[in-house]
Image (tube, rainbow, N blue to C red; front, side):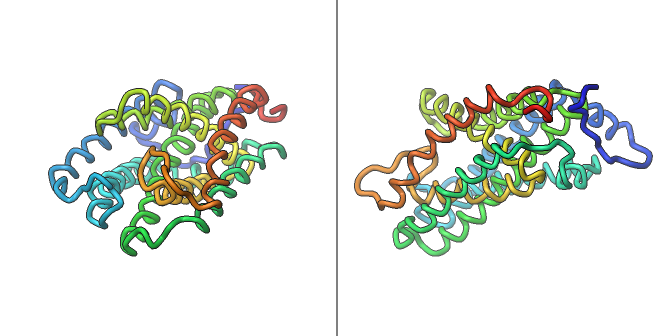
Length: 280
């Protein structure tokens, strides 16, 4: 392995199940992501059977609509990922201090995520939503951050690094996995062009979260920032993967251009981030 080698800090005897994942590699990481996506989709179908009648066209109209339309499958997804990581004994590895250094310029990433979060927190029309919807939406956001970051920037990144993948490869593959997780939106009836646009944006956002992981040295920060970014976006726009129409609070208007900033930062990172982290 080269200087990007990732130390796992795993000790003691390992079972065959654990050794299978300990070997890492892109194919195994993609397989884990594919299995998770399949199970998450199944959880969504189960949620529809259990409470589909409660899901409104405006998903944020009622607490029940949010729960069955968004929260339930995420609870299942979080539980499945937690079981996987527990069975592999990877919690310390994934949540501990990373041994791959970041660079000072990467601090731009968490900053450009925090700014729109703050703007939306101050500009969301809270009076348009029932109190229960607001609380559940923020709780659901934390589930999104936990599940998507634990998988993409946690499990996938770790499995790539243990095989000595360069950091540019780690960044691209983990961001592609993150983008592919959102392909499931096709099943909800969204138009393919909207889904493709969403996947393009989520790839860029995934790169920003990777940079956040690198510079903070901890998976906790991508989880928290992602967990706040999504619910503030949902409540600011009134939907999922939608654009607010009509009058808009000036603070929310200021937050909107940050989507473009994410894309620009991702493009810059694709050029600047190199194989070896010491030169990134």
